[in-house]
Image (cartoon, rainbow, N blue to C red):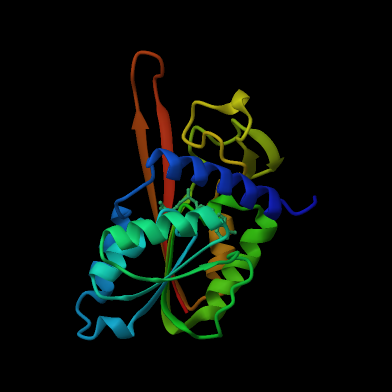
Length: 235
Ligand SMILES: C[S@@+](CC[C@H](N)C(=O)[O-])C[C@H]1O[C@@H](n2cnc3c(N)ncnc32)[C@H](O)[C@@H]1O
């Protein structure tokens, strides 16, 4: 299968440009990321010495939180519009972060550079081939003892297999035919199973997987599941 990296980047750039023009982008941090940082890093005195990288920073909502909490925040996204929105949101909040346009499959940072690498709904926007590269990059840029935290969609979600199939775990929801679900317009969504996570965890010295599931019931559906993995890896 040819790489979908370019298609993915172009589509995300279009989605984010539309969000920027409508002012309809996410302004608030992802809750599990707040909890993860609080539990593991709030006790540190000089937080500016703690380098935290967010992969696929989108609107920059998590970077605002990181900077307000006095961490040294870095954000990367392959979409130039994501970086523009992040600059705007950071400036609106009198915050700053080091922002660069780059793909998570091949990071410009040196080895062992970050204390923490985070992601929220970025990695699952990639194909299996690219996800393999991303986890290798996370391991490479983290310091020994550094931690990764990620929020990944599970294949026990109702949306699994509703889109156009790319491979056994990956689907394309970009056509209007597949609209209406959680991943409306997303060009690539990879739904993770535990075996895959174990493969990535093998690169690291320790791991913790939290499986989160919520179900929604109403008159038109009896049980619509949304399931995620909240994962921690330590180098
Ligand atoms: C669903 S949005 C999430 C944005 C943000 N993390 C949040 O929680 O609001 C996914 C983001 O990941 C970015 N992204 C997806 N794959 C990427 C890759 N391989 N490299 C860099 N950015 C990527 C997209 O451009 C988009 O901004």
